[in-house]
Every structure is written in C-alpha cells, then in structure tokens.
Amino acid sequence: MTDRTAEDCVFCRLIATDDPDVTWIEREPDAVAFRPLPESVLAPGHTLVVPREHATGLLDASPDALRATTLLAQRVGRAMRGALGATGVVVLSATGADAGQSVPHLHLHVVPCWPDDGVLRWPEQRSAHVVDGDASAMLAEMFE
Image (tube, rainbow, N blue to C red):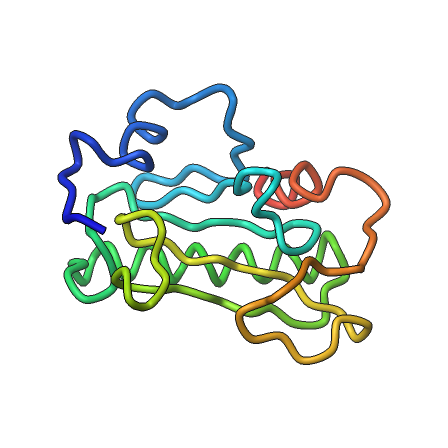
C-alpha cells in the first residue's frame, strides 16, 4: 500500500462529495458512519466509522480525529444494541498494509454480534444472524 494524500483517498472523496450511493448512518462535523460495500458486510448493521480529517491510520491520526471517530463508534455500537438487539460489538481497525489495511484512511469497523455468532475476532466469514428489516436504515433512525 502506498501512502496516499487526501486528494486521492477514496474515503475523503466519499465524504467531500456526500456521495448519494453511500448508505450513510450518521454524519457529524468531525466523523461519519456508513455501510461498507455489500460484499464486505460481515453482519447486519456492520458500519464503518471514519474521521473527516484525512489520516492514513491510527498511528498518524490527530487526537481530535481519534476522539471524534471513537466517540461516534461508541454511539454506533449503542445504536446497534438499541436498533438491532446486538448483545455486543467488535471494533476492528488495521493500520498499514502488513496489518491488512485495505483503504489508507483511518477507519473503524463496528460489527454487531449476537450469541449465535460465537466469538468474533477478525471475522473469517459473514454472520449468520438475520435482522428483520434494513439494518442500516434501522441504525440511521437511532440518530434522528
């Protein structure tokens, strides 16, 4: 992975253009939350939380970007409990190509968990849990 600038960062472009094809869960002044691409969704309601400020990863993010991102991740996790009945969440992040980071912009995967999932670390397969309804829409409603 090469170090990229905000100008050619896919997450920075999504945020700057307010991409209408993105399923936005929440948009705050310093961080945003949205559904990952459908082929990447690990469980109903799986959400990416991203700072608006460009930072390649955890190691170069400013304290303000980290604060905004983790606080929004906490709110998303609470929304998963309230809207989806999740009994836990896994927060996943990788910094650097050797850690498996695929998009060079700090992002947290917030993945809801249920008892029928078993122990979840970095998921090797998608959750078998089924939510009645559109999980992303249900989460977004928690922010209204």
